[in-house]
Image 1 (tube, helix red, strand yellow):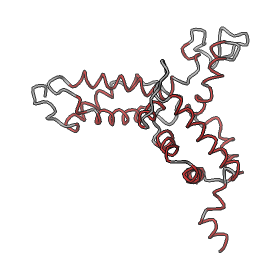
Image 2 (image 1 turned 90 degrees about the vertical axis):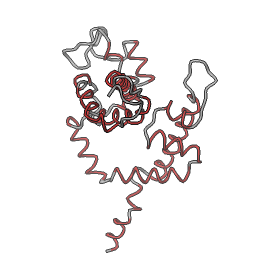
Image 3 (image 1 turned 30 degrees about the vertical axis):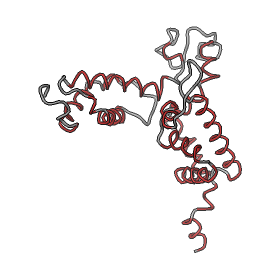
Length: 248
């Protein structure tokens, strides 16, 4: 293939090669605390990225080095965006005890807690983002899940759709664009800022840092107001099927 005319081959011609190179990396994927993203999900994300970047491959050169560079970079990006930026510093700390979960040889309590200055800083700055990003298995929380759903009898998916619908009514065009990019398309702050054409005049700050931060605060405040005014299960009263059943 290396002697062919540049860009004469299409993505589908190399699907087996791409699958093979991805399969070699399966043991390198260790992001196991995010229950909604496994290696198959990661592979799909990387395949889509390779497809988008296909025209950038100089087909006069071997494909595998190009593929492996993309795969390595995407691994780093996915880990950073979904885990590393928010994870506890304990995960890479030499005082963390590998044989026992959340144990520490540095703190007096023997647990990973705020008596460690690194943990204390993480707790103040990134813990909330960690709690949002890192979803946990429900295996050890079934009683909480069952209790919640039994008592509230709410349809979460429909509640989300209703909240989004209400937000669309109160957000201006710019705010709605930010909401769509950040929470529907799940772009990173930096990617959303680029899409919205934001720039930064501060050295050392990513483009659009302040604008995205301000927009997030606005979105949060407006969502909280809707939920405070109507309640998280406010859609139940607006559900057509529920109303029809009641009338019958």
